[in-house]
Structure formats: structure tokens, C-alpha cells
Image (cartoon, rainbow, N blue to C red):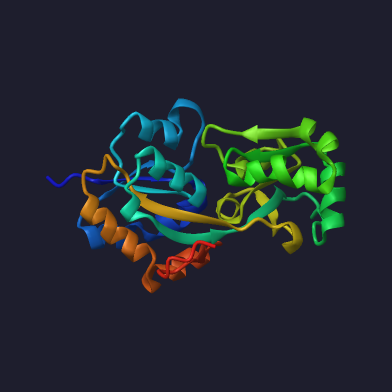
Length: 241
């Protein structure tokens, strides 16, 4: 019996990956075993699982994170491939009024006036709390009412339960979540575009198949599902700007 292809992906690429599973399985002739759909936190995070030597074939995470994995020897350098560009968006619970974040000043007012703010443990949350608040000059007002959503849970799920007034995550992570609305990208002037990239884990059982799948994910055949998920394909030119 053929063993499965083991996949670890952060949340930003999850919707696109799930939409492409039938094609990935047809191409590889094997089932996809989805080990995680979040970078995670603590002992169950992707970095700690790779550090422990957990077997994985395909790893898809933020570009800066993947490059760190390569430096640590957890991902094969020659397999590195940028996949998509991703933007950060804000959302609220379905039925709530639409907050105005159409300009930098409007975003600043919305953040100051919000009673609670949810953010992810990934690159979007790091940007929000470590850069954007400071850039807007509202760190003192915003940090104390901001809540880190860890453990692989989506920010959108917390919003849908009414446990935070507004929340921020990659657009592609918010779009599939039921019970939320007014999913709006940050204003261009303060938007952070992140690249998410793929690589083959050093522990991979099927490195050749994993490389074939990476080649497919950067091909025009995968671009439609990627765009539909709220991401923009980087393509196969090696552009990771």
C-alpha cells in the first residue's frame, strides 16, 4: 500500500491547498495527509514538529519562516520555491456594522474605538502588534485590548462567536470562515504583503513527489484556485519580492 504525502501548511495557503487536493492526489497517485493547517503555537507548532524530526514531505509557510527552516536544516534548500503573495485584512462578526478602514486615519480611529481586537500568531499578528500600532502611534491604546489567537484557531472563528469586536488575519484565512463579514484589506499605505513559500522537509519520505507537487503549485494549472482563495500567485520566476 502506498504511503500518503504528508503536508504541513500555515493558514494562509490552507484554502487554496484544500481546493487543489484532488489535483495533487491525481498527480502524485497518493493521498494527501494534512498534518496541520496552521503554523501553530507551543509544542505543536510547525517549527517544533520539524525540529523534533516529524516526517513531512511538503511544507508551506511564510517565506521568512521557510528560510529560517532552511538555515536550521529542517527544509532542503534546493527545494525552496515562493508560491503566493498574501495581504492582511480585517473582519467583524456577521451582522455588526462595517468599520471604516478606507484610509489610514479611518483605520486608526477604528482601532482606537474598538473594545477588543483579535490577531493571529502568524505574520499578520506580528505586523499588527509590533509595527502597525507603533506606526499609527496607538500602541498604548491598542496593545492592552488586543488578544493573541493561538493553538491553530482562526481569528474569524473568535469573531463569529462574538469574543472580539474586530480581528486581523491574512485575507485568505478570513474568507472561508462562516459567521463573519466586512472582510476588508488594510489601506495600501499600511498594507503588508507577505510571500508564502514551499519546500521539502529534510525528513521527507517522498522528496521527488513533493518536488513534483511544488512544481504544480507554481504552475498556471493551480493559479485559478489560488486566486479564488484570496491569494496572488508568485509564479515560477523565483520572484519573492
